[in-house]
Length: 237
Figure 1: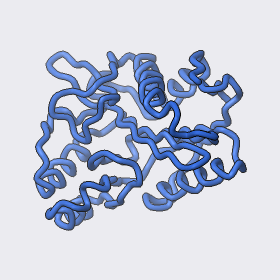
Figure 2 (figure 1 turned 30 degrees about the vertical axis):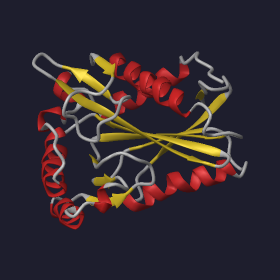
Figure 3 (figure 1 turned 180 degrees about the horizontal axis):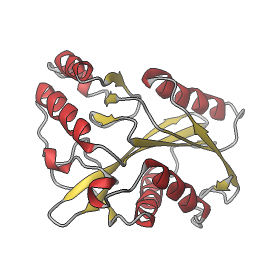
Figure 4 (figure 1 turned 180 degrees about the vertical axis):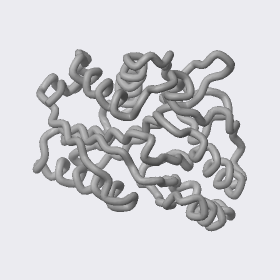
C-alpha cells in the first residue's frame, strides 16, 4: 500500500509479471473497466514488459504503418496499437510500466493536472536513484509530449519517461513507461519504425537511466517509484 496523491487514501500496489505484450496491455484496460464500474479501488500496477512497440492511433493512418509494424517484428518487438494518444513508443524488459488506475465520477476533470503531477512524481523517483531528471519535452524526442520526463547528461538530454492517459466514463488510467536499462535495442527499433512512418526525430534523445547513472537497475527504480508515491502529499481536486 502507498499513498494516493488524489485522495490521500491508501493505494494498492500490484507488482505483476508480464503475461505477454498484448495481454499486458489488455490487462490495464480490463482493470480500468472494473474501476469505472465501481468494482475496483485505486491501484498502482507495476511490471516489466515484453519487447513492444506501442503505436498511436495516428500512426495507423500513415502509409508506412504496415512497414513499420513489420520492422518492429523483425527486431523482436511486438507491434501493438494503444488506445491513448501519442506516437510510437518502444519498451522491453529493461523498462518499467507504471499503471495508475482510479474510479472517478468525472474522469475528464483534472486530466491535464494528472500529467503534470504524476510526471513530476516520476521525475522525483528518478532523482532518488541519482538521475538529474526533469519534466518537459526535449527537442527531437520520440513520441513527444509536454509532460515527458528527461534525464540531463554531460553532453545532451535523453527521454526517460513517456506518459499516456486513457479516460472513460467512471474512471481513468494513467500509464507511464520508464526506460531504465539497455537503450540500444529501443533506439534501433525506433529508428526503423520512425523511418517507415516518415516521422522526424533525433535518435540521440532515446536513452535509459543507466546511460546517465551506470549501474542503476529496474528494481532500484521500481523501489524509488513506490517510495515517491509513499511520500506524495498533493491532493488535487
